[in-house]
Every structure is written in structure tokens, then in C-alpha cells.
Length: 133
Image: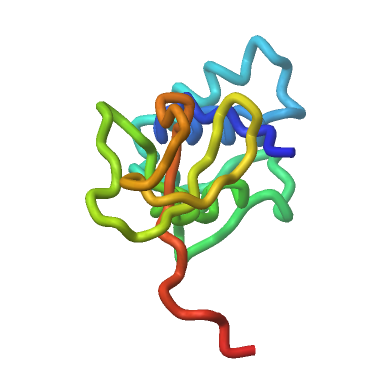
């Protein structure tokens, strides 16, 4: 079962993951610690610098930048498109929908669906070609 809160923004997700990195810091200090580095975090969660008292196995490195490993995939939301303002895929291609009420995935074309798509928060196109092996 999925345990992700899908109503989050990208910025909120980045904040949540950095605060989780500071788990050895007293809870009242975590927000302050994040606020101090927040201006230096880019839109994909990269921070140019180093974080004291954070386990190395919890961070990803790219040159001089670091970020929580839990943010891997944030660039494209792991291939998912968030449904915002009623914007849906416009063609008849079959897509995979994520139902936020019961965390189930459903395959359907928007033009041929008989479900109430207002309960769906995300979609992504299904691959056009089958795997080779």
C-alpha cells in the first residue's frame, strides 16, 4: 500500500524529506535547521554544501551538491503527472490512474472511462511498446 500524501507540493515534499534527515536533532530545532538552508536548496532538492550529523547513507551526492536519497525521482515525480485544475491527458492513449481514496491503480482511457475521475490525483501514460525481455 502507498503511504505518500499526494496533496503535497514539490516544495513541501522537499521540506519534509530534509526535516526527516535531521532526526537526531531535537524536534524543536529541525524547522530552524531547515529554515537556515532552505534559501540554498534548488527546485529539485539539491543543496550545495554539507550537513552535519546526517548519516552518509541517507544522502545522494552530485559534485558539491547533496540531497536526501528519498528525493530521487522528484525531477519528473517518478513519471507521474499531478492532476491540477482539471487538466487531463487529451488523447485516447491508455493511462494509469492513481485513485487517492483507496491507493489503487486503474488502467483506462479518459474518453472511455466510466468512473468518477475527480477522486484521481495522478496519471501517467502506459508504455507504447512491450518490454523486450
